[in-house]
Length: 490
Image (cartoon, rainbow, N blue to C red):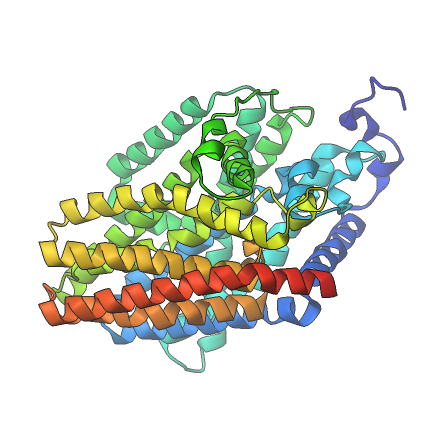
């Protein structure tokens, strides 16, 4: 192979004769090996059961509290579409990114650079494997939520099967959308043009078809077989066209970044302040930079605001906005910490004269510096938009600060530097979900019962927020020694 040989030219060699069935079998084995080695075989195997439990219990709770079945069905399809958008990025993750996230791995998807395999063909097989694998492991458990909507009967297996196919179709549309956007990006389309095209398309569909038509398309179970078949055909055409359009030789242009946080090391009155600035600089230099935590918090704000409107339309009761948004927006602590550790690992610090405890302490300071403005701006917008009373706004701010520290401490204590493990580790995900529910569920119930909140309720919630914040600080301070001991023993 000469230096001028491209992956596409290589794909015409012996590897091109590899059957799709055999290639899919190898990819499925690698997918299972990767997840079981990273998260433990039985921990990963139990994760679909955790999803099924959450889907069924959440659906039952929504239906029993008066939520319209159309809203529940639509919400499950939105989750499937969002997961499809996320899954569509997996095949395009560069080897450097995967190594930064997961450590040293040799993935079959990267073999097109060293073996006579077509990059486009291998990528297409990879995406097909993801659609089948996650369609069974993740989307199928979600489909069990239809049992709570339709009830148990002789036709339950059929209804679950149809609901699963509907969710799978929306999941595939999400994957195809992401693949198309990335393919267009490899051909030099600027991000602003892609964003503008998406906005125009959404507005155009809304204006032309209206909400009913849009729902019948994006929620196939509510539409006709013709509509569902058309959506499937569009997804296939978009996916196939995107693979043809995708440029396998595309590489992101090199960039330079100044150490904009150099003065912060001198301003922080702590030892190893450079570790804090390193975390901030890593975030700033990554794609999206420091805006990524703001975008995540803004998406959460939009979802919560939509939920408030849905609840108000169904029950006629609008929750106390300060308490409601303060409790829920604290969940952005998880995504903020995830961004701060996405391209970091404890092993990278072994060459420096610092302890693991110092590294965790630096991450906690970086989290506060990034997380405080990340949640403060959306919360201020929410309380002003929904016209919260002063006591409600104050207690909501206390809850936001306390719960953010608590969620952060819970995350770092359970997952260390690998919060992404929540996505596939059944035990850690269930533990984290239980820890969040203990704090969040009573708060949301209180926010609905007394509107606006009385002084007694406000004082009680304020004390709870401060107490949970202290718990979060304790958990995060114990995370360093805990993971230091586990790292040395492992």
